[in-house]
Image (cartoon, rainbow, N blue to C red; front, side, top):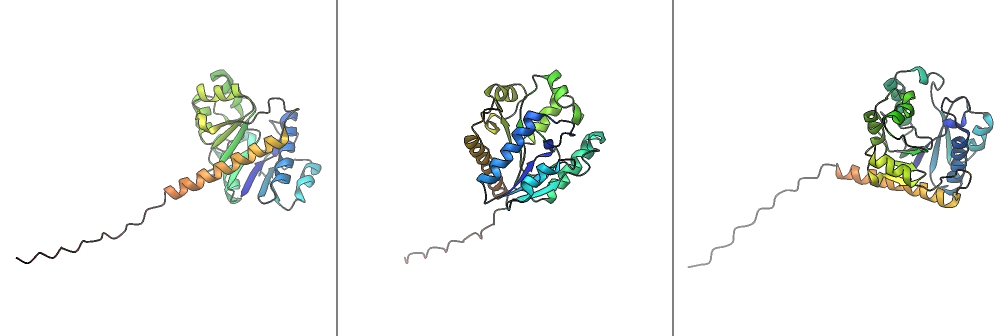
Length: 231
């Protein structure tokens, strides 16, 4: 598999930088890369990411480093133009799945998307705050954005209930990977759980693709007429 991994939150200058989520993202990437040598991780970084963060992963044989384009300007771009840039960039990487541990859902990207939500907005007011950087203030916009993700990973059962009951996200696609306290994560189990989600999404995508293939039309066999019995 080619696994796209969004690590742009490792840059302290990023407008959504959060130290705990950055630490979680860094450790998850370390564990995934070490535990899964057979797949390629395409790590997407902010151009302003500190060199120490880049060099830690750049030398790994199963890691490709790429930098998101125009990261310092995207906050000022219109929603669809910004997401069009990101989606085109991801498409060029030919990924099997893209995972954002800080909740980025590239709206126009046609590939498989997994997003981790560290919190879920309570309702319309919460949704407005949650989506103000994307300029999609309404709850309808949030629901449409969520539907683009094949899986949403959540840290708490309560967040799953909120996401499914209030925002209408399919329950089967909301996965709780228990890590309520980011300082006390069972990393071995957590890494295995996240990898299992990657594989499930890719397998589902392959099955869906095969089901959409046109079925060959087989020639209709004509039965030979039975010989009539002699009178």
